[in-house]
Length: 196
Image 1: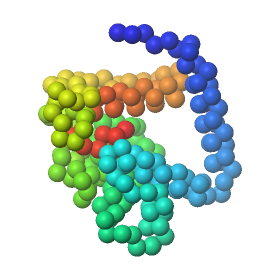
Image 2: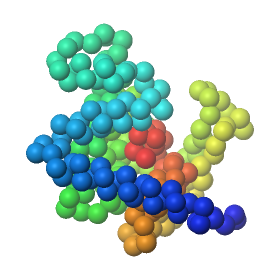
Image 3: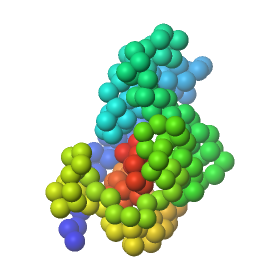
Image 4: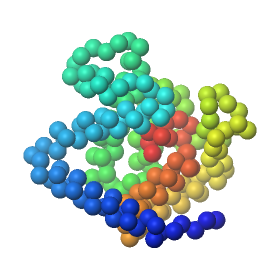
């Protein structure tokens, strides 16, 4: 195991905290922060969905929001992005009255894959078989990354949930570690990047 040199990261963590504080201050000064957040979350949805193969653009998403009809060949991609945005809103609302947990993540995952690509890959359920990341149709031996076995996944997810509930000195560091660990665990058959 390689030890992480935290001293090298501290200046970056400080900059991230300062930027987040400025951003929060700017949002607090607005009468309706959703005006600023809506395009930002739309762009996040586009970028996160692109990782998993969608090709719709932010412009197309904003045009759809404005009621402008989009090309038929973009319908599936736009639906995936719409699901992403709705799942994110649901998660944000849930987090106002309950902590981030495995059950919340499973519910968000179920919403994310409802009626779109991946709907047949056990939405809302952690995987019970081995998955891997690689080029389309590649075999496991040619994978770029192989997540933990489904045999150890339940314990790894429980450990991850315990870490989420713990109190770290710096929440930004904790979020970064939790995100990286989630992506390493890759607990769903599909949609891990968007959920992450």
